[in-house]
Amino acid sequence: MEGLFSLLLLLLLSLLAVFFHLVRILFNSPVDFSLDWNLFLSWIPLIIAFFADTLTKRFGGIVVLGILSLAWLAFFPNAPYMITDLAHLTVDYQRDLTWHDIIMLFSYAEVSLFNGLVSLYWIHRSWRRVFTRGTANTLLLVSLPLAGFGVYLGRVRRMNSWDVIHEPGAIINNLIESLLDRTAWVFAMEIGMLLGILYLVLWGVIRFRIRHSKKNTDSN
Image 1: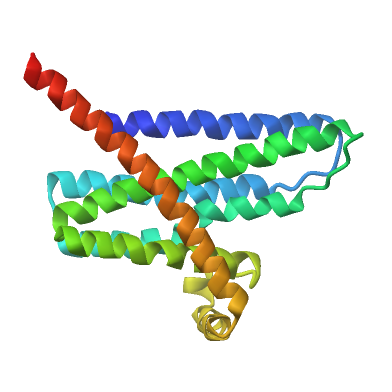
Image 2 (image 1 turned 120 degrees about the vertical axis):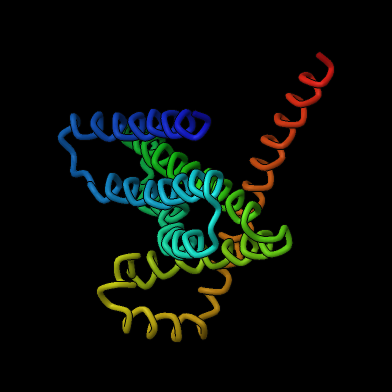
C-alpha cells in the first residue's frame, strides 16, 4: 500500500502538469507534445523500480533484480532529462504566456524529477535487500553520473532509451565520442551531483520518519 500511495500522489502531480498543458492549448498557441511523451518516459523507471522493490521484498532473487536494474538504468535518465526542457523557455515579461510557461515547464520537470528520485529510492532499497550494503551503495553512486551521462546523450546527442534496442551501434559510437567531450563529463557530474544531493535529502527525511515511528511504537 505504501508504494501504491506514492504512485497515486505522483499520478496527481502528473495530471496537474498535463492540466497546465491543456490550459496552454486553450490559448491556441503552438504546443510541444513531447512534454507529455517525456513525462510518460519518466514513469517507466518508476514502474520498473516499483516491481523490483515488490518482488525482492517477497521473493528476493539476484537474477531478476539484475535484469530489472539494467532496464531501470536504461530508462532512469528520462526522469532528470525534463530539467533540460527549461531551455525551451522564451522570456517576455510583458507576455502572460511567459509566466504560464514557467509554471508549466517547472511542473513537468518537478514531477519527472520526483519520479526519478522515488524510483532511485525503491531500486536502492531492492539492492540493499539482495546485495551487501557496500555493493548497494556502490551501485547507487555509479548510477548517478551515468544518469547524467544519459541525459547528455538525450539532449545533446539526441539519443533515446529505445536506441539500445534499435540502434546499438549508434549508441556505442556516441558513447565513444562523448567520452572525449568535456561538456559530457561536466554534464554527467553536475546532474549526478544534483541527483545525489536531492536523494540524500529524500533518504534522510524517510529514515527520520521511520525511526520516529519506531520510537513512538516502542514507547507505547
